[in-house]
Image 1 (tube, rainbow, N blue to C red):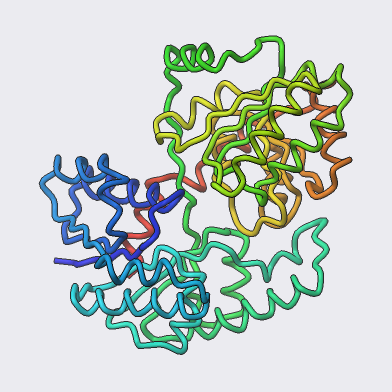
Image 2 (cartoon, rainbow, N blue to C red):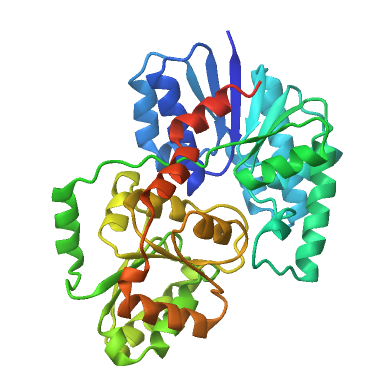
Length: 401
């Protein structure tokens, strides 16, 4: 009977979603074997729905919580180099205790140096690779700085050494453009594409109507949605400053919907800025600041007209694009890296230089004046969603060995 170990000490954002998908798949398909999940001691408090799910099925899933003192030491360590070695040592310790047939690191990127220089893994293992950039030179409009070139070189050197490790089984790469490039450069061909999972649920129109009513959205305005953790790298301030620069006759036609958690150190600034811009520019700005339950996420995308994904130099994939594709909503996205390439290839909307405020102002104005320009090709969107199917993701994870 196969024994599998998943290692993920982080429990926010996509981390909990990935575990929920995997546990659900394991339970519903009654997979043979044991699934051991090593995670945060805070997990049961933050995700009781997952605990209840496991209890409702007659299957062997064991949640192993990292000891509190061990977890707090790791979490509170400010030195990045020291922190990644602490995380790797935690993995090694629990892998020795559990003795799995194989393990999966749910976030490989920051553990590559400890894999090379630290203790040896007690078992065969694979890892999810989120943020390769060394292939970005193949993307149109990509103009790397010398820092980008240095990062790409460093990534390649480290990753290709990791792939030579005998116990390293598969590189589960979320960036499907990177897989061929990696396998061309490495004779062992350990890279495989891993779907970035998303499950699109049918819209409950009663709940949608109720949410619209609760938010008090002006029906005469175009709704722009900025979803997720609202911090500077997401482009929140770039959007606000662009809105502030719009003529009032444009502003009167816009609702900005901000949905997600605000980092504590940004809250006062963000709230005061949205209040000022909303009043001065006659823009309707509506905020729902907090963690949004998984079942409600699709409702916000469904009631919006345009999705904003104006990250600043974002590396890797974005679930926002997939949610937008599922809801059949156009995007205004950063043109940088993988996100820009996906928006262009799948004709999802506008891919722009989101670091340029005037470009953002012009894009918002263009969409307000001519919304019909953002025409979507549903066949292309279906292709993108099919690549990132939840069941594909789960099957890949459970069959990498």
